[in-house]
Image (cartoon, rainbow, N blue to C red; front, side, top):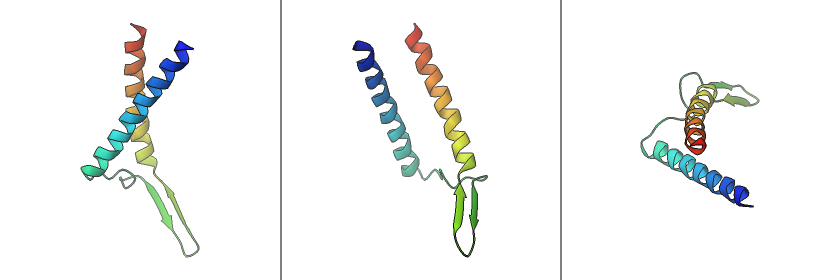
Amino acid sequence: METVARYLMIGGIILFLIGGGVYLAAKFSIPLGRLPGDIRIEGENGSFYFPLTTSILISVLLTIILNLIARFLRK
C-alpha cells in the first residue's frame, strides 16, 4: 500500500509541475500550440489542427524531467 501512495504523490507532484509550467507559459506569452511547424489546415467545410512542434517539445521536456526523477528515486 505504501508504494501506491508513493506513486500517487509522485503523480500529483508531476501534475502540479505541469500545471505550473502551463501557467507560466501563458503568463509569459509563450506560444505553445502556435509554434512554427504546427500544422493547421482550414477549408470551407472544416479545419484540421495538429500541434506537431508543440508535441515534440513537450515530449522532450517530459522525457528529461521523468529521467531526472527516475535517477533520483534510484539512489
